[in-house]
Image (tube, rainbow, N blue to C red; front, side, top):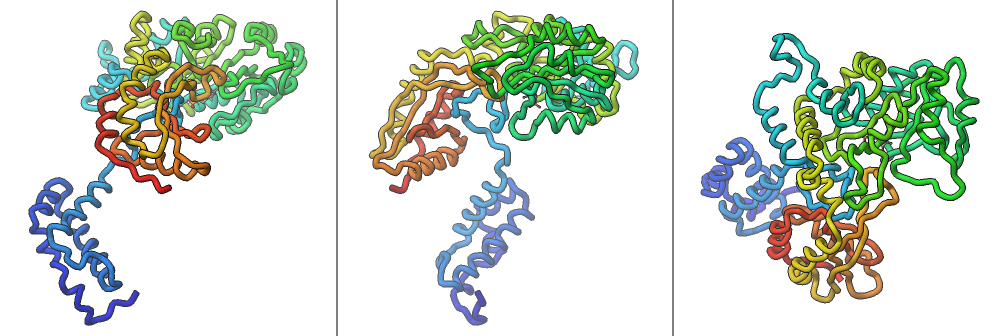
Length: 473
Ligand SMILES: *Cc1c(COP(=O)(O)O)cnc(C)c1O
């Protein structure tokens, strides 16, 4: 709106200089810099002036009150965009929440690698250039039994590199039941197009037989691909060709078998109460020539993609120019090395590796934690709501073991009345607005906070106790 030239209230606003002289503003300048604070004060005054001319705003704005509101604004702007949160969704490896959280050993290794020059591509013995993947190659060979290993940005990149190296301009045969899409952005047919390999689908969605592969193999075949159906399961009248049979077929024709495991695990997960998932070692033992898997799924490390297997085939991937565009940086190599070393001590792995620690938590232990938090939770939710503890089922997440769930326990809250949706959304929003946002999930008219991944209980408790919520009825 158009300001009247003689509007008197705007004249009562303090000058920029007077606001900047307020002690609060001086403190802000020390923290955010003089330039940022004076810009923010100028903006705040301009907004005030406009509001007052429109008959709104704070008519009695003082230098102090203006400096305080500028401080709030600067504080908010300064918050990191990527915020720490509490993952109480019940999905342990939540892709949108950053998947695996790193073990302490990895965090320390990353900090050290950030702070100093390192031997990333340097051999101390010979004083000449080294290879960055050497920092983990030996470990991966030791832990998986593979002849060689090559590391890239993520498993999607690993699949792309394998296909582009070994099937470019040729055909890749895959079962129709395994043409996977992971999280919308990883689609096998699309990756194949990018790698310039021709997709040859065999079998039917629910049943594929050895003969289907045999018949599809021809002079243009480059690779047989087996992809883990990570985020779904085909049940009922089904048939899948076992990896070992596929390997035999591939080798009979002098072709390599590539097994995209997705969520690579190096240990038998049955000991942590999960279903037994094929390990990387299993895939190699079954005869796969190349196996790929992620670093930040079941492995519990940083985002990374592994290519392991036959030496000549892995070396060819490492030598492909594409590798240069998807290689790992020193930070992730440091994190990966430290994470993998924990696998040398299987007895204490579940203590040291947060992902496994979360998987291994028993329902009784989580119920006991819920019991400790119930009073604070009940006080936090609006008084006319029902709050309590409920048994629930956690998911592994990230497409690992899609049908497997872990018995868990949750704090829940349910609003009164019949139309609960809006109230539940509102409480979820209040939880997301806490200093450390809490991410739960809504299920059957209840807001659930699955406590499986709650490690910082004191922080969670203290912020519940210090907030009151307002939920519109
Ligand atoms: C998760 C997954 C991928 C993609 O791995 P990212 O590490 O997320 O790139 C590829 N293939 C399978 C089978 C997967 O489960």
